[in-house]
Image 1 (cartoon, rainbow, N blue to C red):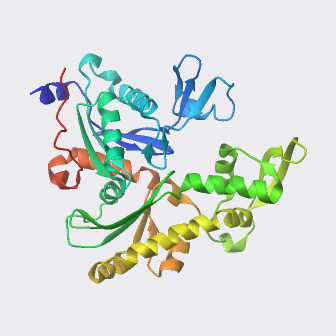
Image 2 (spheres, helix red, strand yellow):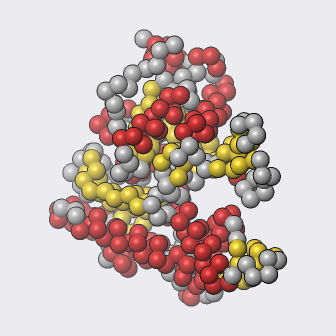
Amino acid sequence: MLDKFFGLFSQDIGIDLGTANTLVYVPGKGIIINEPSIVAVNQKTGQIVAIGNEAKNMVGRTPAHINVIRPLIEGVISDFETTEEMLSYFIRKVQKSSVKVFARPAIVIGIPTGVTEVETRAVRDAAKNAGARKVYIVEQPMAAAVGVKCPIHEPVGNLIVDIGGGTADIAIISLKGIVVSKSLRIAGDRWDQDIIQYARDEFKLLIGEKTAEDVKIAIGSAVAINGGEIMEATIRGRDLITGLPREITVTDADIREATAKSIRSLVNTIKEVIEETPPELISDIMHRGIILVGGGSQLRGLPEYFTKETKIPVRLADDPLTVVARGMGFILENLENFREILIEHENDIPPQY
């Protein structure tokens, strides 16, 4: 009864709660929020200073008493209270046209494969405490499969590789279930750290995370592209020997060398998943191909590299960054058809008010 009552005053939402970005889908409106999963906190007062885009602009530019943090690390909650505050902020942005006293949305929210029950409960509790009346949990590769309209209800193999900021999820999906899956803590953020380490080792230059991310986006690639044409970018940082500012020019070959080990680990994990997959599903996958989703999958040349290494066609989904959020939105709009893929808990009952 309470569930229906609060539903009258609330806008139900799907949330792709990622390490790097949080996307919010509203039925009938699409994705209305796409902001970094970053929070700035005043250490003196304990108050939240900024969330999302505003907080990202502060990275590396704050005084000592303001700490800019990512409340999720490698796909799981590392700071529960800050995650709760961030979710509350996004929910309030969506519900601003609702009657705030009664705004208690139902939320579909994603988690990486392979997370523990404790980590799953942390996501559920954070969403509940942020104001959700009902929380539905779905594994992100499954939401991605729904988002790219894979026939998950049929006995057909689908191989999804979801490369986000903190984790890469590889999953074989058939008959509304995950047959084989592995989650790897190697994704976009790891590539940024690889570039930082490479600049330190090769050029004796200290650079920040934002600089590393910018150069990765500008010239990063898994294989040489454009006929081997050299791409260059300028990066600025602190010389580790003199302590003074210094500027250097790096090429796409430098960035490939920096990230090569991590990308190779990802390929090896994909191969492991394929090796554990039943032969009939492998036949389907060879025919249907591997689907890349997630923000990290936008690295240049990644589909070509994976195709070469796995001998299976690989394609990048349309608008890969939003695929998981769109899948959650579709699940939210068709809950009864997708109830089997949701991770629900027997004690998941509406909160009492």
